[in-house]
Image (tube, rainbow, N blue to C red; front, side, top):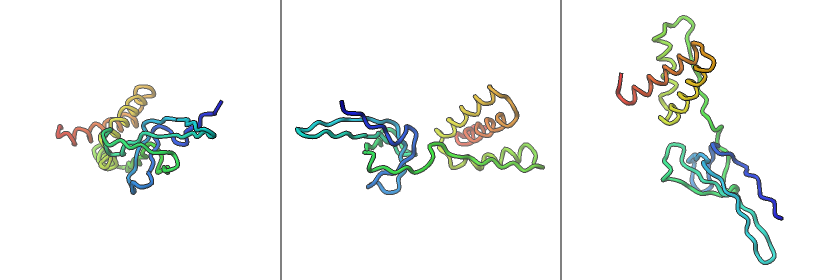
Length: 143
């Protein structure tokens, strides 16, 4: 019996692909294949990738040996709160950190912080949920 190869990359990893420049792709699927020849057996791991800021219609397929890990799968956000700032200034400081994020990333973070707020409570999670909602409303043009 031929052992199946274990994937090098995980779903959600950000990668670059040889021949596609510096475009960063997110791993959304993985498939292992075994090919049998007359005197040989070959295994291959192929990944389904979408551009980080693209759609599934821009999907790319790549083999493991053509891929390089680009970054951690989730963006890190630095929250800056001045100790003597008012609540309105806090919201502005947080909002600046969200300006370059995609709507999908903001919605994912909203769901995470809302769950943390419901589970643990506390002012910090609620403030971050409010800041994300403010940014989403600003992008939609709703006040």
